[in-house]
Length: 355
Image (cartoon, rainbow, N blue to C red; front, side):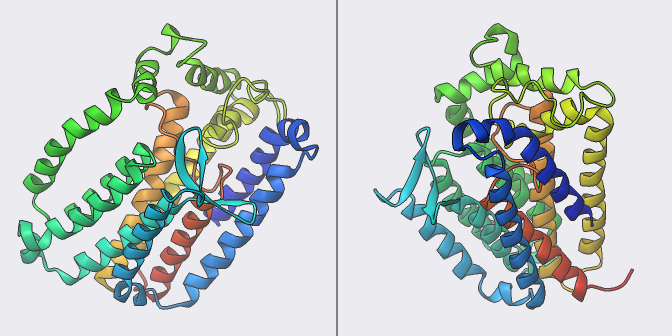
């Protein structure tokens, strides 16, 4: 019910934030709404599909899932196959819809790590070579292919999720610390050697230093949130969505919620994600086996982390990352795979112990 409520909020806000833009561009005010409804339908279909199967079967095919993910990520760089937008090769174009392999890769890596950890005891997880390194190698290979797209935000989020799963499985903190220390120089180079990423950091630190350039998006997001007041300007009455706030229906849809529906509605959305996290933790706690527990932990962590980052970016707490707000933002691959994740959570709950 929590997810369905978030989906309903997303449907309303996507239409509200895109009606004028889609009419001007496509002569159809419901253009984005129709596509979002198709994405939701596909997502619900796959959710029920994965609920109907025995999730434990995924542990047997986890390596195949990772290999498929690697193949798709490699195919992105084959000329004529992928779709390039603003210099980024992250999508395949299929029947008029975009497919983002990195979303599938997230789920594949989480499934592989969950299967890997479920086979190891705490004593074996304390060993670096056999209990820690294999998962890091798989994460590293997938991360490199995603970075080439380029997509640093997804890599950071997935890395944090895998680190949490390893920690929960009993990996020594010093191993995680070593990996973090080793990654810091690369993160520094990836951020400050790329002009647009460096601009994002500078805009985050002081958006008013370049209000019409790199800081424009963040300023407009904060203006949207701040101008909504307690109860908002009213549904459909956002000013910032009128070409002032770029990506208003994707990365910054939370800002439009704050502007049109106000602080109360924004807090309500945050509370829904908190409830989602709390009830998902119960599923982890009462999972019938280790694979189900680790799989649930990875899925819950990824969805919750994306929500925290997206809301934090909208409020100016984090630098711009480009991660959608789960179940609410417009998007195909992200929404569908988040729905598949929910289906797997419910599947684990179905086999789990009653509290």
